[in-house]
Image (cartoon, rainbow, N blue to C red; front, top):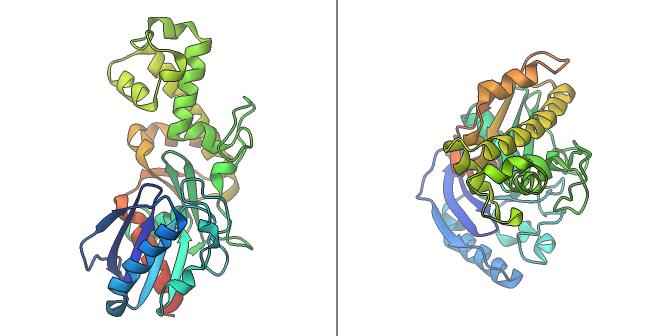
Length: 306
């Protein structure tokens, strides 16, 4: 049995556990806050590794950001993590083999091996949360591109409404289809559409309306909230249509917090009515909140056990 110490690095917390080559947990999941200082973060990494490395065969990290082709460093900007994060050489954190991979890629691999896309060799996982991420499985292999940065679907341009993204470019998929995108759409509609005047949130300033308000407003049959959500849904579908037309997957798996608010059958029908390739299935993720840990553990086993 291969044992992997799997660590999922988030902007607010780190979660970690020991997982085997089947994606099964061999220990309880532990959590700790993510330090805001890079030296403190490296110290936490070293402490977690030190406590576990004698009992495991390898170490595997799932993290935000594009990872280099050798799976040793994060190359791209990670604004939710401390300055200097991209300078960490993860391979130096342990005497055992160390593997690091983008968290969306890890989630996609987990869905492929133990989740909603088991055995489907052409599938895509889209994570809809504060941002938008994507992992692409093509002919049974994780698509990484020439430098390891492949699959940065959140940066795909989809609209011409001039909305600025967190990457400082305009009209990225992420700036419309994420939870943050839903909030921005809500604020734009509040400023520009009279439907807001009869909303249950009309006493708020436009900039005060949140993603949570819209989700709650849907439950209360608020017309403004329904209009905002329909615009968000249209933006999501536009991006998914583009992705399906390019990659022709059998399944798109939707993960992340925003996934629970969509009707997969409705989204599937909207996409299939527009695409020029064969029909696609839309499914919700099954690997759960630990998909990053599971995926990076399984990918590490693929790399170092072969």
